[in-house]
Each structure stands twice: as structure tokens, then as C-alpha cells.
Amino acid sequence: MRMRGPSIELPDDVKTVLFRVTQEALTNIEKHAAAQSVRIRLAFRPSGLRLAILDDGRGFDLAAVQLDPRRGIGLRNMRERLASIGGSFRIRSRSGLTELIADVPEAQLRRLKEA
Image (cartoon, rainbow, N blue to C red; front, side, top):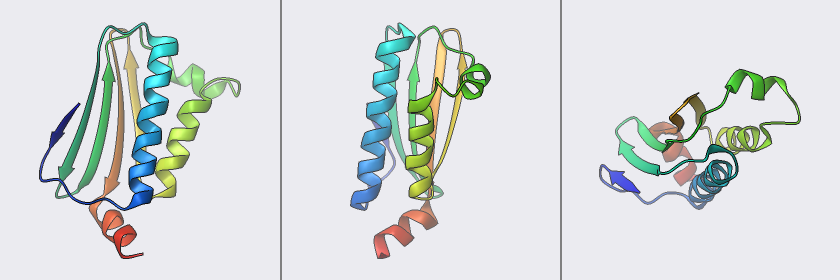
């Protein structure tokens, strides 16, 4: 795991969401990816917070997973968790690289801190 940028104190709900998203991503990687390595990056930027989780596994067809209601439950859960704190989620996958990116805008972090 690597962190970049000046760290900031995050609201508890943001910490919980980031933990759960990371946990779900690692579970999916272990179950499905046959990856040899995983990289986790947490970056504090002027525009907000970014969590990136990358693995070197077999990849998957994201469109096929999204079309099948029996598959991708973990991906949907991650997306919903991030949406609950005003964040966004995207994923790119091909053989040898799957990249999950979670962003929480700075304005949203500030609003959650003030709540």
C-alpha cells in the first residue's frame, strides 16, 4: 500500500466505505483473478481522495458481468457504498491488469466532515 499527498483526517463514514471497498476488492481478487500481486494506492489530492486497487490477474469482461444479475454483486456493492458518500467508482479490466478507481471529491469530503 502506498499513500501520496498530505494525509487528512477522514470522517468515519468515509473510512468505513474505503475499508469495505478495499475488503471487497481484495476478496474478488482472491476468488477470481489468480493474481500474483496487488497494489493499493491512496492519494490525497486538491481535487479529493483517490483509492486505486490494481492487480495483475486474468481480468474479466466487465460488460458481461454487468449484464448478468447473478454476477458482479460485489462490484455493485462497492459502487453503492461509494455513492452513499458522494463518491464515484470505475473499473477497467483486461488480461494482466484490473484497475479499480474510487474517487471522493474534496467538496464532498468537506461536507461530510461538517455534518
